[in-house]
Image 1: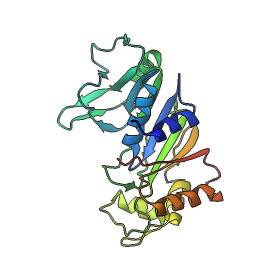
Image 2: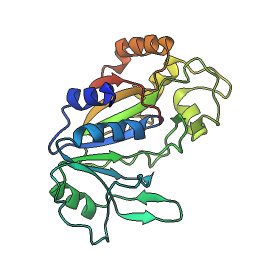
Image 3: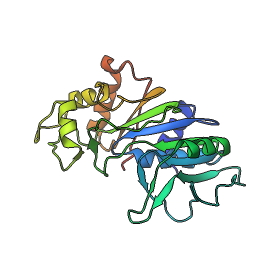
Image 4: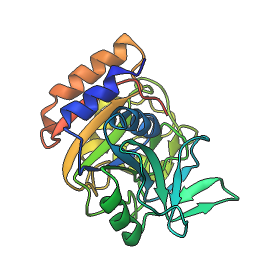
Length: 238
């Protein structure tokens, strides 16, 4: 059975025909995108794209590349399709979503979900000046931030771009991660939503314990997050 949290996300955010959604942040992005895609694919043709790099999908999912003869209108009225400029065979990754490919996708797909950030499979991240890569056509930006490390000591082993994260969160190596650190990451101009486009949605991920549920409840009430249009939470992990 598919997890209700993905259906909740789709319904609460009113994602449907014509929606273009960019997902940024760290641990939980891929699970969230794939979960929403499965729900949406019951009714729509869903394109999964990336403005950075993502690993190739499992066998069985169609992949449409910029130079591929498969760039025909899909005959099915619903389903999931991976769309990218190119396949990097040595890395086993799909790469790029050019304007040409975006326009083709808008013309032939119903919903576009874009993975617009990378964290090298680490739970947390800081952002370089060019990150995240959110396309201007985006209508909803979902920022994914895991809460699984709250109360735990963290360092470079858990965080992509550790130096940038330290600067944004005002944390040092070996310090325990707190809700205050996460709020700085969420609200900083150099943080999670610094380059967001459209509606801003915070998705607090990796909830696996009662303490984390309590922390999420407190975060949702924090007035410093009043500029976030919607706050959701769930168990999405990777």
